[in-house]
Image 1 (cartoon, rainbow, N blue to C red):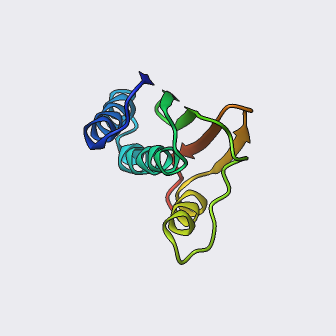
Image 2: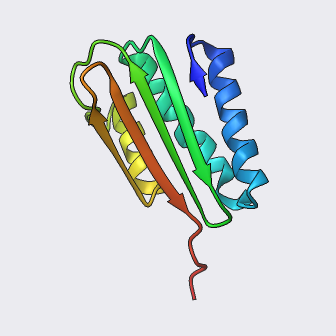
Length: 123
């Protein structure tokens, strides 16, 4: 998805699209987490002043990867701050709900990604 506008309706569209994609791939169990985390990445881009976004997602029955690339004059790589503020909560969600995540400063924006896989039940 390439998005030239960011508003609440756009964020809802992104969340819905990610959830549909993941459920359609047969990974219903990770669809809510993938949708929530995608919303958080989009919110982070909005907070950093992104003017446009590219949202990329791929998934199968066992795994989903989402990348959110934003375009604006870069202020550096995405580094969520203290746990007491919104970005701290975002970092905690990424740390707790993903199998991995990271960010790359591209020079004119940032690319933030996460991977979520289906975890085996505890024995």
